[in-house]
Amino acid sequence: MRYITLILLSILLTACGESLSYKMPDRALIERAFEKGDFTEASKMAALYLANDTLSPVERYEINFMIDLMKRIRKDFSQQDTSVISYIKRHYPGVTMEEIERWEKSNALENMIIDGEKLYFNSAGRNLFRIDTAAAKHFKYPNGGQSDSLTRFLSWHIPMLVRDAQSNKSVYFSPIKMRITYTLTVKADEVPEGEVIRVWMPFPRGDAKSHKDIQLHSTSDPNYIISPDTYAHKSIYMEDKATKGEPTAFSYQFSYTSYAQFHLFKPNEVKEYDTTSALYKEFTKERAPHTIFSKNIKDAVIDAVGDETNPYLKARKIYEWIDMRFPWASAREYSTIPNIPEYVLANRHGDCGQVALLFITMARAAGIPAKWQSGWMMHPGNKSLHDWAEAYFEGIGWVPVDQSFGRVKSSKGDDDSYFFFTKGMDAYRLIVNDDISQEFFPAKIHHRSETVDFQRGEVEWRGENLYFGRWRYNMDIEYLD
Image (cartoon, rainbow, N blue to C red):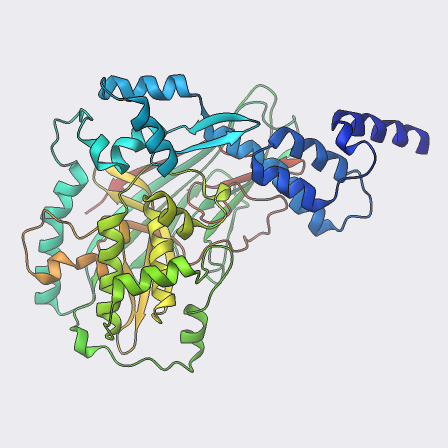
């Protein structure tokens, strides 16, 4: 056996090239190759490194995840320059190579060098016309330039909610009852026949004050497990065995009543923080890898807040600062981004979760307790995964802050309507998560597909995690009121 092992190691050493033929690579060498985009070399060295039987379980887990991470990045960055430039020219026939190069350098046209080849993010072409204002002038909007249906709906709905809140004098009001059917289907032959497939799917939080009367009506697996509310990722867990040649479907149906919320307070009603409290310390601290008070973050806070001292007005200034600078754009998978707020600052755009994390990090750096919340948005005709934040104001409590919904600019209303999403949220929500990157119940064995959030689901069997693309999900919504 020892002789066979030596032969295999020799083969791996030869495959890694002459520069590595004389010694086992150390981890720093693997990480440098990964950071440089030399994925093929890094993968070979990582495979060789894993042959060392003295590695701790944690280190083995981390190296295996690095190998998987390179696969994920390759999946996100698969477009070559010919296809991307062709897309740009369809909308902007007169584009010059100088403009292309400028957009590449600013990363408005997001690209990465992998194994010496320049590759583009799969949505780089479309995102360019969202991110760069000069490029946007050339894009031919398929809807004729009119505002989208969600903006139109919110422009009507938010002023109505503000009026209802003012007349009801209640934080929670205007309930909507919904019935949800959620299905997750693992594609045929992704898992060996007879092996148990383990699935976690999103479920409404029982501790969310805006959710009431949660009722589970049916499940495909009678032995389901619903996680306790003490877990930040609220899930319903199921199992089933794989059948050769057939997809494996998991489903459940539930109903609940969701309430809009709006906190009617004036800035001068916010009290000074008790900076010695456990809550304040917990939700104003740094937490790697995404909530770090770097120089970039500190400078952004100074630029946004100035000399303002009122906690709510500071939060509102941060909200506006982000809203004015970072347009929405299609996002890479979060697991491939080392620090999401820094990514937003560097790339000048972000989707809902990315700008929410930027808000949370800037708010904490400014001394305002802030945390994550996410799940789904389910406005008529506009269901989607969605992330937002919550900020804590002394004397008021936790208040929702939906950074990516902006200020509903087309809304014709008073100051409360204009800034509704700095202290309110509509009822068309499914709240699933109260934090990022937390444990599941039951525990997951393999690394996660989504390392930050949890909205679509997680799937594994004893041999591996099943990444996105190997299964699909669907949510059907019925509005009962």
